[in-house]
Length: 248
Length: 293
Image (cartoon, rainbow over all chains, first blue to last red; front, side, top):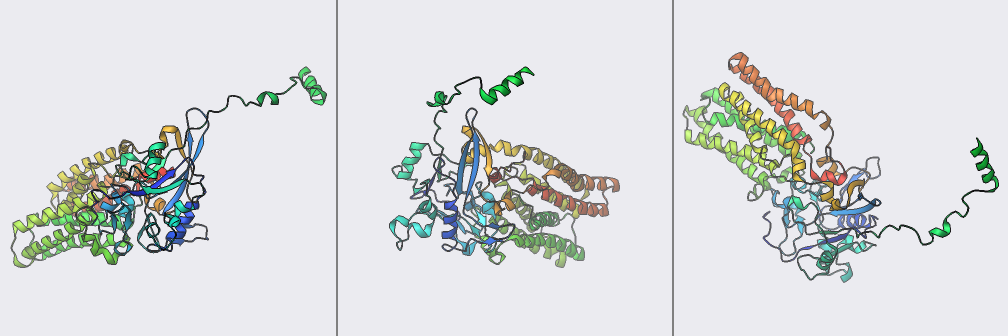
C-alpha cells in the first residue's frame, strides 16, 4: 500500500559533501552503468549520438555559483538524486501501489511491474528525483543500489551504492541516518548537514554538507614587498618614451 | 507543467459530462424517452470520452485497473472509484426516465452527488501537489467544480442556474489567477532553499547537469507560451464566462443560446486548462535556474 510507514527501522541514505565534490560526474556514470543492467528496466537513451541526446538518469550533477556579499564567488558542484524522504509525497500519490517506502530500511522504490506510467509521482517530487523512462514507460528512480548493499555475492567493500563506491573525492557517504551513532549521523552533526527545500515538508533522509568557510583572503602576500617595482620612474627606452609623452 | 493534450481533453470533456449528468440526475430538466436517451447519452459520451482520453498519456494503459487499489492515499485512485460509482449510479438512474417513464429521485440525488464528488477528486489530484504552488491553493477545487456545473447547466438548458454558476465560476477564476500568481513566492521555495546555499550569498545556476534536455525539463519546466499568458487569460475568460452570459442575456435564456453558449464555454475551458498547466511552475525548475518571474 502507498501508506507511508509510521516509522522505519533504519533510515538508509546518502550524505553528500558539497565542500569536497569536484563535479567530475563519476557518480553519474557509475549510477547509470550499474542501474542500467541491474534492478528493473534499463535506463534508456534517446538519440544518444545525435544532435538532441536525451536519456534517463537517477543522479545528476548540477553546478551553482554562490556570490557572497563580500569576497569572491564560489563554484559549488551539486549532485542530486532521490533523498528517500520520510514523508515522501511521491509514494502517497501513486494510484497503483507501485511506489512504496520500505519499513525495514526506509528506501523508496518502484515496483515496475505495477507502474502504469502516469507520471503523478514525478509531479509530486519537488526535487526532480524521478524520471519516466521513455523506452520502458515506467518510472525510474534511485534505489540506493538495493541490489548492491545487501548483495552477499560481491566483496564487502562493494556493498555500498555505486555512486559512493566510485567517488574519487570521497564526497559521498552511505549509512543509517536513523542511528545517531552511525558515521554518517556523526558527520552530519559535525558539519551541520542540511535538508533541501525543508519548507516542502518532505523530511528528506539524505543530507548535504555545506561548503566549509573559506580562509580569509590575504591582505598582502608575504613575498609581496619583493615583487614591488624597484624604480618608480622608468629609464632606458621606456624612460625616454615617458619623458617625451609627458612633454606633449 | 507540460500541457499534455490528452489531459486537457480529459479534464474539459469529463468536467462538462459530469456537470451535465449532475443536472439530468436531479431532473433538471426532467427528460423522458428519446430526449432522456440523447441527454444521458451526451453526458456519458463526454464523461467517458474524457476518461478514455486520460489513459492515452499512460506509459502502460493495460495496467490501468491497478489504479483502483490505492484509494486510501491517492486522489487519482479515488477519482477512479468516484468516476465508476458516478457512472454506475447515474446509469441505473437513467433506466427510469429512458425506458420506464419513471423517476427515482433518491437514486438521482445520489448520482448527482457522486458526479460532483468525481469532479472534486479530479481537482484534488492537482491541488494536492505541493511542488506546484499554483495548483496547491484553496481556489483549485472550487474552480473545477464551478466550471463543471456551469458547463453542465448550459448543456442542460438551465439558463437561470447557468447564469448564476457562470458568474460564480468567473469570480472563482479571478480569485484562482490572483492567488496563483502569488503562490510560488508564498511557498517560499527559492534556488537558495533548493540548494541549501541561500544563506551564503546569491545562488545562480552555473551549469546544468547535461547539455541535452531530459524528462524533467520536458514535463515540469514548460516555459513556451507563458509570454502570451495575459492574452490567453482574456480569451479564456471571454469564451468560458462572458460569451455564454451575453448569449443567455440577449436571447432571454433560449435553449439554442444555452447550447451555443456551451460550445463557446467548452472552447474557453480548453484554453483555461491549457493555461492551468502551462502557467503552473514546478519547484524543480529552480534547480535548472528556470524560474520565470
